[in-house]
Length: 113
Image (cartoon, rainbow, N blue to C red; front, top):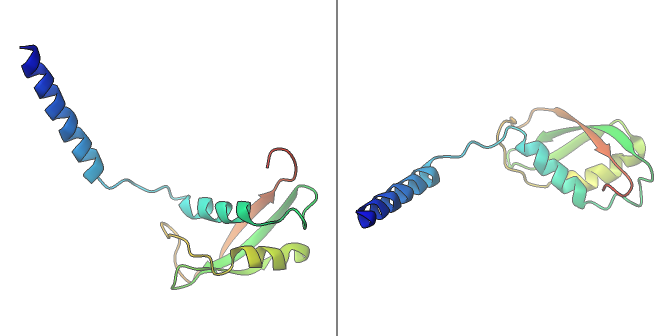
């Protein structure tokens, strides 16, 4: 009897795992933001930013899924942000191509970075 229970439980487990693996996992609507955050975290902003800074970054995503920064509201960091983000490919989930988006960016300087 124990063997039948074990086999039945094993089969049920394998079927559940197969169902979960086959089911399409919904992607977070913020995944584009997470991708942009990841790119900016790997950019060398330390030589340009010495204090906590907030700015607005306006960008579009072209037909090749590449980010193109159109402007920022911080002229001192405009060139740096453009170099960090321009032509990086991202995976689109909820953003539309060729539409201007504005993203608030906070750059924290210090131990928490």
